Image (tube, rainbow over all chains, first blue to last red; front, side):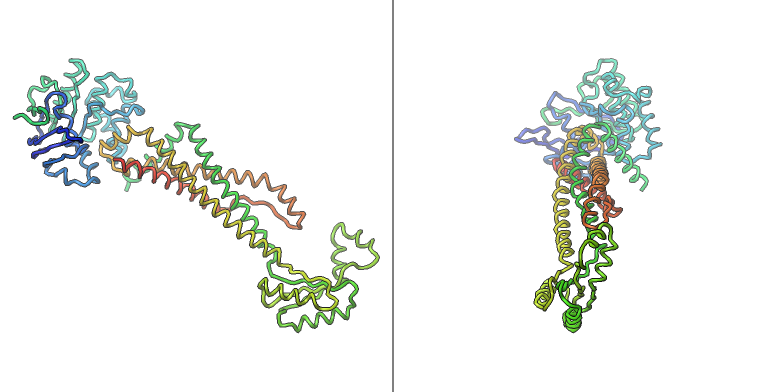
Length: 215
Length: 299
């Protein structure tokens, strides 16, 4: 599903965030990207989502080379990927319902079916009763679950998450990890950048160290 | 197609919501646009009225020739024959002094004055239509007629119509200039308002982009916002012009009466109104478009 072939990413003036990374994540697999702070975990996810472009090497998603992808095709790639961001990126001037609705509006999903999907996604993460609330009224764990609901409402085949359990207490973190496991069980490819590897004991680990992948 | 339509509907609704979310800001912006547009629109209204006025007034150029008061009828007859033979003259209408007297007496207010006079104060007169209606040719004819015997006064009747025409041409150019100038102003206003909107909704734009929104999707509500601004400003300008027309109607009619003209000031016609609203909406859109282009280039 995802293949890195000697991918490197260099930020100006000469900081190597990733160097010569080659790895593969199979379809329906759950994998963790681990490593110290600054090891290149977020960069790796950003490359997959097309937020950053690799400086060298080839990155293929479902056989499609991202470096060769024209800018205009990028939105359509992102629609196939569910993303949970480190800072969540919720819209605080919209209700919980409208936050989850946004990805469906973007693809032009028929309105009535969209509402059903939004409710299903909220139900899945345990926020069905909070759809009219504003994000600011939610707890940290609830906000994280809202971010997950938004990432999965489009039913993507690939789910990326950057530190989804950071800043959460143990119980809430376990709860969030359970949700990722559920998506993995229904066939979604899941790639999570995290320190909390103990929450995902069965997942394969991609260990990064100063931008290089340890085998 | 249905998806496309519903996305446009959503964008328009979102733009309307944003407009309503900051009513004071929106109102002041609309006012700025409305006043800017009211100037050329008002000019156009005045111009249309003046055009209508000059259209109802005969613009066929004529020369009036007045005989001396002491001239005999015989002299007038000779002049009449001479005019009839003249190659530059197309048609001659003789107006005897008795006829002028009778006509003036029938007019209100003048009867007493005329009856108080010992004799008929009006001379015999001719109204001449000419073959060549250019101003130069007519002026040359007038100079020639003035040298004929027993002719007191020669007048180019069409001179004021020509002056009005020239004035109207000037007016039209002025209105166009104003429209171009203030239209550019409207684009600038729309540009900076949309820029502020973009800054306000920056996080929303960023998130939408990350979730796979196309540039079209991101731009759409802002473009609708620009159109609504322009359209709202256009409506406001129309109302301002209509109010001004209503307000000026009575004093202008009074003034026109003094010049023996009937004038009821009309507000903008259907065509001009449609043009005003169309231009306003279009320029609002254009300002928004330039603003979005500039913003999108940063990504």
